[in-house]
Image (tube, rainbow, N blue to C red; front, side, top):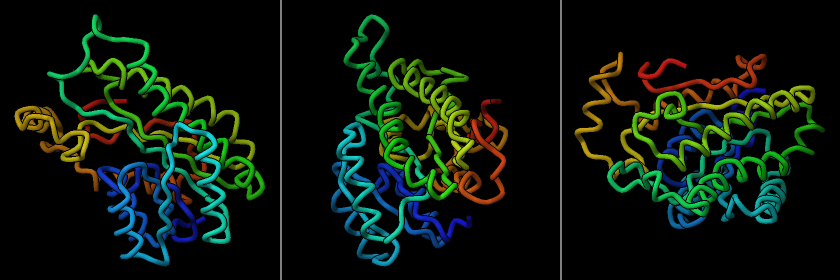
Length: 253
């Protein structure tokens, strides 16, 4: 199925990286379900700009009932079920190495918050999508990860551990769901210049990353979003359970 024929859910799709993903999908002609939690004004602006292509819906992706209501509302709006899901939403996190909790400061609650935002949220959207994807014999699920799993140059313990668990879930879900024509993959980035989560990062850190990267620059949200399109297109129909690192070649997968 071509991207232009798909209805794609982007969690956290009204701001930061999610907004870049949404705009890339719109340029491809897709209809986009923009999930948001606190970005109502930004989501409504997208609806005003693209009334035929965008449906915005507020839902906490860590709440299963709210996610199920989101899928039902999107199906009612477009007359078709969601074909593809991009699990992008990031729960209360900033890339600020000075402010990160050290090992001695970690609590189960800190760890659980990021686990819920990554793994539980992806479980909720996957389960909500499953029945219709099985019926259609088609589905694309893309989970957003991080190259910190492979190269934890800054030890964001809670965030990186949750994304490592999401990578494992990506691979086990791909194994389980491939028989139904559902492909599950992960796209992992480095620090992007700039998103809401990376705006607290000092310029010196961006400069260091650029100097260490084969492309000699920091990846932008738009460049990262463009790579997601491969996983949604027919060109990746035999690709599942994979983790593609998109960081300008900084980390080798």
